[in-house]
Length: 556
Image (tube, rainbow, N blue to C red):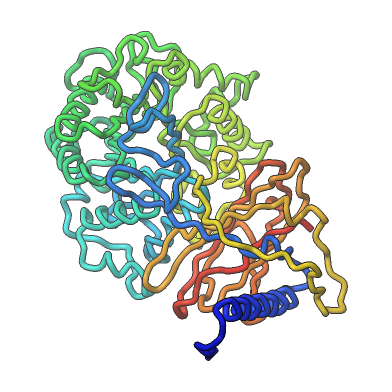
């Protein structure tokens, strides 16, 4: 304890305090920099990077602690564009996390991981929306399965009904800055019906469920809308005015019923498979045929709430004849324009591709070529999407996660990352000190030294995506601010009272009691100018001093 005599002049006390503080700071820097592993000697001017706070909701706004440009909810449409309440363009780009529509009545994977941790990883990879499928039967059931409470996770979900679990997932997604699009995927728990009724349920059951959800989540800002019915197909028609099969008319009835109780939601309408008067293409995927919009558009009470949503898949799901045309893959663009994107091209309404996905992303297989072409098309045409799927247990497509429910399918994520933008959050400014003579590591063994510009070329943005009583998740976004590409890089940080239990997109190694070195995987070593690489981890808390500190990245 420091004691200063009250008889000392005030200026002397001030000078002494400054001197002691300066000496303490220098000692701290010397100790830290000499302990950084030789393989990642960090520039002290980049040694302290502010941790940005996670996004959350306040009223109807998705915000950060100090937002640059928050999304003002609710969303609506202007021509082909989804906009927020201030008219700013918004691109929902996310994933499907399925399970609530199956007999588990809960999103899958909760037998392996905590739902908060799962949401944090989705956010950390750059996605901003989750399409959340459900079944009418599931929301009416009191029973839930497929959640392992013995792993010390998901405690809040124990004893809850499926609908209450949906509540908690939506609320946590809102706290983490994730939008939710609800999807009426099935009526029962077993299959996707051709029509919006059947399997023991009436049209009234379907619409009443939607109205119940619209009222229930009317004040839950991050629930942005209703995907009315998953993949109408078979007998489903469009524009023939058959009251029993015309999906366009049913979508109007359901959409207007929802808007009558909740005028804030987007109404998302998928296509059909066939049975469209005058359709040009012979083959369409379930829900993928929106040719009928040209002559028979959906008419809602609020026209600025309508979004059209095709589904599109590759040869890994089914070998459509057009995959074997002589002009494949050049024929794909014409198909997509005729099938759905003319709606956006003609400024009729926005397009959100509600499902696309596949196991292969290479440039040799039919599926891989198709998936690469579609990603380029989405990017060129500035379309929204929700990828199928987050889950690895989709038998024909696989998922972004691998079978362990933790590791990321890196080639797939690398492809999709071309469509994702890092979260823009205003950083907190903290002072840094540049020592005049940075200490040199005493380690005598050879090491790789950072390039002279490496310390200033790479910027690290740190975001605590999720933070609960026993754990937290962190993402790092490494941005190349320079004019030349970085061929390899490393990131280092200190962390005291926490233990990493899972990570993604890089190799995290602990060196010493509190020091960590992060090495990119082979596909992520190169960072082009203005490109961003994402990585991160989740950890168990071992005390109150758990947050990463002294975070910096260098090119090597």
